[in-house]
Image (cartoon, rainbow over all chains, first blue to last red; front, side, top):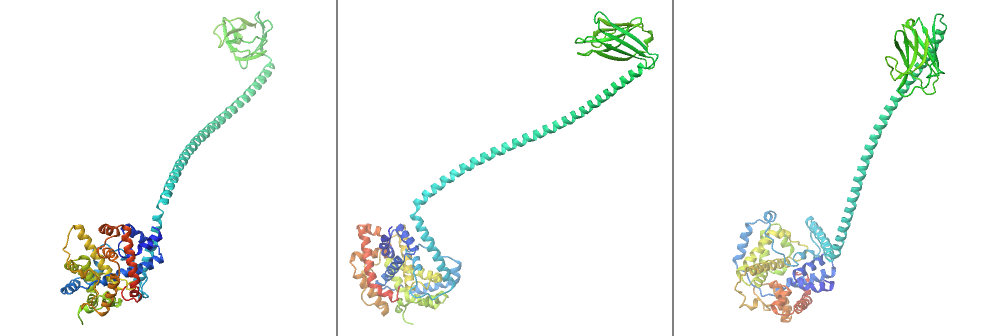
Length: 336
Length: 200
């Protein structure tokens, strides 16, 4: 309704002729505080209140007052008003609105209840004005609501996407942690292996040092052996298999050891080894030795307590590990 | 004390209501004496039945006795409040009766004076009430009958402008115009009444 229509509705409202929807719209407009409509309504409601004064007066039945007074005595004013609420009939249009009008005379009561009532009415007025404003903006609010719903849905989708990405990154982080843990374990194992290798290297160094010491000891022992006056020596010469080869066999009676110093023997074929024999009645194996590629001389030291009984010595080529009796070609021979 | 009917309805003041508020039974009795004729006349005009009008009056006064604490003495006169309350409750009864399909024989059928302004003197009222009644009655009588009819159908029968248009078989705009013009004329004629602060 336009304001002009609302102004024209004032007399209709005062006399109670508006339809329900029109009445509610007009009351909402009044709550907005329109001073013109309030002033007009005050006058028209005064007119309406005067209408019944124009009727020909009629007297109610005389017993009615006594009946009312008797009924009233059954209903004490204070107790009744505070304990029992009568059934509330519908309000005549404008009845409640009377309380919105400014007093004809200045208010004579400044008591708290009136102040509370006035405050309540002001609040109701403000609420009504807002309600009226909102009613006129229902369409735009609906559109805004739809837009907000769409934005909310869009934000929800984005949130779900971010959550999925976050979950994926957490999974990747967990895999990285697992991989790092595995690599840490590998590094620890490598460290252990390194420590083990270093220990083995130390062992090898020790063995090398020990071997070096033994070599030096052998050389020292050979040097002292050569200085012994009663040492026995047998010269070995190369056979047709190795004419350039030769050897020297020494026997130390104090230690019961024989020393074979062989030179220029061919390289042992794969799977073969040289074997030294002491021949008494039959060949007896003294020991085996190997000539590697590029090697020109080799020293073999073995114990041989029966050296004195041997008549002849020989070196033959045998399968690896040697044989109880000579089976291969003879490369060196010599006699006492 | 004079006869109950001799109290001036238009002179009910807030002080009397304040005494009723405090549970003063004598004040309540005075309030009845001052207002019962006006309210009964109104109830009878709306309901058209003496017994029902009397029942309604009893309900209204007992409601006043109980609800008087809710009356705002600083806003509007006690008479205007009582008139509004009585009309509202009477129309409630009328609508409830209509909804039940219940029909009373209209006891005012043969009493046209109860429906139209009575411009003659009455022994039931004071001089002041009589002067006011004459003033209002003359103002209403000065309106075209069609405007009187439209206003009375709304005020005394509780019909909306649409219902009035249907009942009178008149265009809705015509009914609205009749009510607006009639009320506007009454406002111009009766403005002195509330400007003096006597009644409303």
